[in-house]
Image (cartoon, helix red, strand yellow):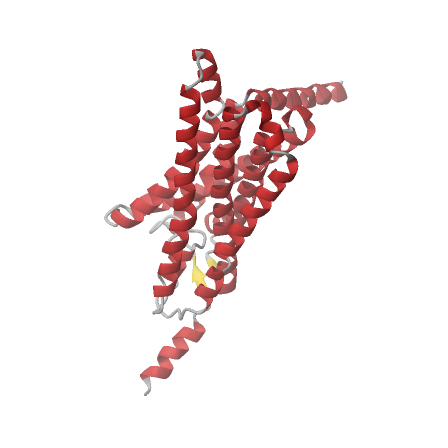
Length: 324
């Protein structure tokens, strides 16, 4: 009888988690602090610049760029969701996070990742319409339709992730409270529970199959149809021009899904690898896509690149005039 109260006490008292920086070398966490700070600063600057440029330039008020705005907003949300704990761990060695805080963070991380995936699907549809029916492109994707798509993406993401906090909250935590990363994820938190994770595992598997997995299938089908349409174009130059409009989106797809697959493979088959490899993959998975998306679209999209250059040049000229 005495063992049962002790067991219950351990469950009740376990209300915090410990986040991890560089495994086994916590004293060297500060080495990662400044690079992470620069990364987050560039991520915020890049995505805000994309939003600003599209807002002020009327020529960019097209469906493709509105979807890019949605992607930038989602990336900003993901960045803001992870930045406090990651910088806290590496910069201030603040590694404890309350259970409710951890649940809130994993909710927002997963919801913004779901939104990213949904937006990439919408962008694939956008590219298909633009190539398949360019003359009616703007008519088939008016602002009202884009707004409905954005609402649908958010509602799907919210409905899919909404059960996760409750599935975590019901679990008894009486094992180690040390998480694997410097932020909270549903699978990582779930693995620390004493029992009753079958529902969480099943829900996570079904959720991944019918959202992220289905999104990948839809994107692949979209590009098969796009390729079929492009091959039907007689002019070789027009084919290259049509395919070139898809390069940025293809890069965004790879930037989002490749780190996700990499982290999954490392967790599943790389248990023998150094914990530092797991740490680096986890940080790349969560921090690099929001950083690279605005870079890719700025480099590969001529209109955005020119507008950013004009904006920066104007500000520099204005500052020089003010100094003089």
